[in-house]
Structures are given as C-alpha cells and as structure tokens.
Image 1: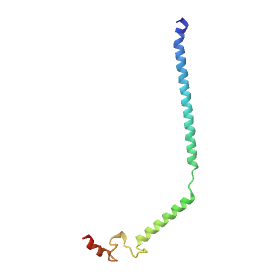
Image 2 (image 1 turned 90 degrees about the vertical axis):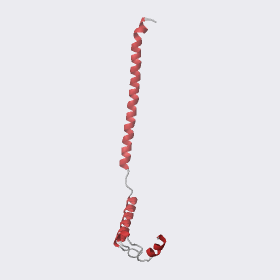
Image 3 (image 1 turned 180 degrees about the horizontal axis):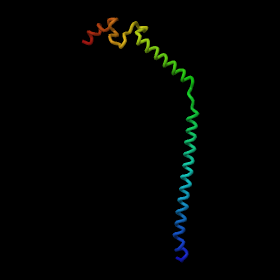
Image 4 (image 1 turned 180 degrees about the vertical axis):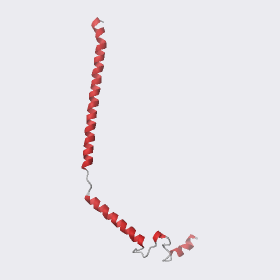
Length: 105
C-alpha cells in the first residue's frame, strides 16, 4: 500500500457516502413531487364530480311518496279501511283477533 491510497481512502469513502445520500435525497424528492401531483389530481377529480339531476329527482319523488304514505297511515286513511294510530287493536274490527285467540291460548 502506498501513502496516497492510505490518505485518500477516508476522503473517497466520505465522497461515496455523500453521493449515496444525494441519490437517496433525489429519489425522495421525486417521490414527494409524484405524491403531490397525484393528490392535486385527486382533488381536481373530486371537485369535478357533479350530482346527477335524474337521481336527485328520483330521490325527491321517493321521499315525497314515503312521506305521503306515512301521513296516510298516520291520519287513519288507507285503502284497507280506518287504521288506528299506533297500530294497537289493528285486527279488532275484522274478527281476526278473536279467531286467533283460540290458537294462541
């Protein structure tokens, strides 16, 4: 071994380590840039999504029909006759309760 290689070895090792750290730093920077671009694209896609007016109309129609059915039940008006509020004694008018009384006894 000569004198030059002995004195240059630590400097060469440090230079190699610096180059490796620089390469890793560059790769991390590229990953960060890629991640930021993807996040920005996702944000733009999210903002571009708009509600479907046909689905909104259908949802409003179904909601209105459900409210109408609920109010018809709550008022006692039904195509099956008068329905008492709360549902208590619902079968008392047609004799079903008395016919089932013997079965449940």
